[in-house]
Image (cartoon, rainbow, N blue to C red; front, side):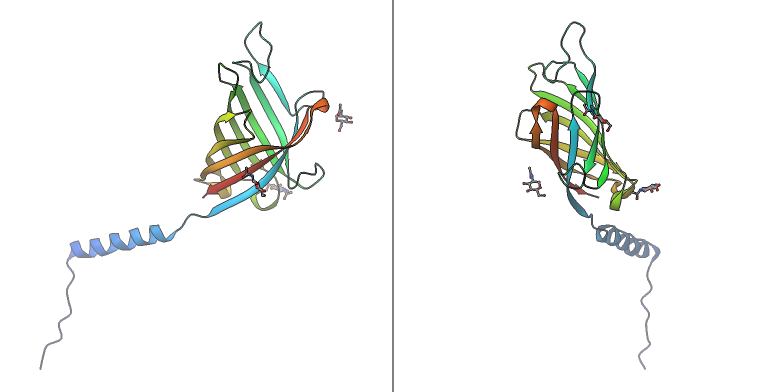
Amino acid sequence: MAQNSVPKLSTSSLVLVLALAIIFLAQAKELTETQMSLYLQDIAAGPNATLTPIAGIAGKLWTFTQFGTVYVTDDPITETPDPNSALIGRLQGIYVASGLQGRNTYASVSIVFTSKEYNGSTLELQGNSQQFEQVREISVVSGTGKFRFARGYATFETYFLDQPNAYSILRCNVTVLH
Ligand SMILES: *[C@@H]1O[C@H](CO)[C@@H](O)[C@H](O)[C@H]1NC(C)=O
Ligand SMILES: *[C@@H]1O[C@H](CO)[C@@H](O)[C@H](O)[C@H]1NC(C)=O
Ligand SMILES: *[C@@H]1O[C@H](CO)[C@@H](O)[C@H](O)[C@H]1NC(C)=O
């Protein structure tokens, strides 16, 4: 009678099997790609401004094209371009006119979700914005809540402009892996 031989795993091969299993499980947790189009309601002047200069070089006009001008913003974010559509959150943060030649802005802004699916989560956007391009692209560097570890990119385009009232609607398309 042949004797049944149970292969005996050494400790080191057990460790190897476990390590491989862990690597396999880690890879199995795939990142989710989320895409969304958001609309920013932006008022750049007047008593209800949602974007306003707060600092700049003394003796210079504080404008978007003047190097050194710092803006603070708190734009409502709506679901559609209609300003009366559902409020999804707010875009809060700062912009700095950071190009000596006046074309580039440095943006450091958060998308703060206050309702719907992502209520309580945030996305952090940061980087150079070529403000006179039709489409401005900024990186998404991180997030919180449902967007922990997020990274990706966001595009900004002017969707509607009412120059006399300094009112504009911007479309922000966000693509993130998280
Ligand atoms: C500012 O907002 C208030 C309250 O919503 C409104 O009554 C007023 O007309 C607005 N002012 C301007 C200049 O849009
Ligand atoms: C968003 O979340 C906050 C905190 O959990 C909650 O108080 C609030 O009612 C929520 N808002 C909406 C519109 O769901
Ligand atoms: C943003 O998304 C909309 C669809 O929601 C699309 O029509 C538009 O072309 C996109 N803009 C950019 C710059 O990709």
